[in-house]
Length: 265
Image (cartoon, rainbow, N blue to C red; front, side, top):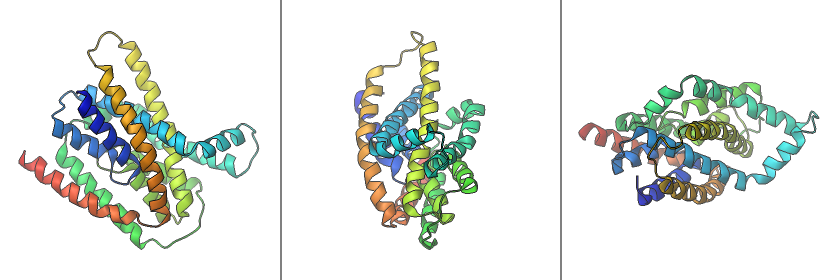
């Protein structure tokens, strides 16, 4: 991977992580387009640019994060403490799958274009169905938090949009749109932090044994961070205005194109 490929893929990751169009799916399509053949290097690149996305969420939601941390360590039962515990509960499914099936997950990122296209069609259906969800003002509870967590776990599959799956699931539960997007964006912090921490340990143990160039990784991370901040703020406005279903058209077209391209080439 050269620096230009890393720049383009980093921008692609940052822009698509928060828009409901599957960043992992777009990274797979981008990797196939550039002919990147080393699955280990590309999986590592995925982890690093997702870590940059982690930082973009921290920048956009820093007030919420500080408030949640301060309230949590006061050890007093209130709305913020409840919200933190629900966030922790929501990541349990993802943590279990990530720890038990790490090798199988890494094997998914091997340029399976037809599979990515099929999953984009699933994302398109999820987004389109939100058009028929009536507006409600429910709050996240334990049941909805766990189901939203399961939706996030499914988004490990490239082509299933994480934000699209989690926000759609929250809306299906009748959760108020502002809280749905806040919960969706904050819940991703824990698994991304955990995945990057484990990857850093793995990379430190393998230091000196690989030939991976750090420059493209750094460029990709910076691009993902800047694009992520922009896309995150944009997505906040889109969901509040109830326009999320329009992205189903984009996912449908890209999914069909990916399936056709994968079948031909």
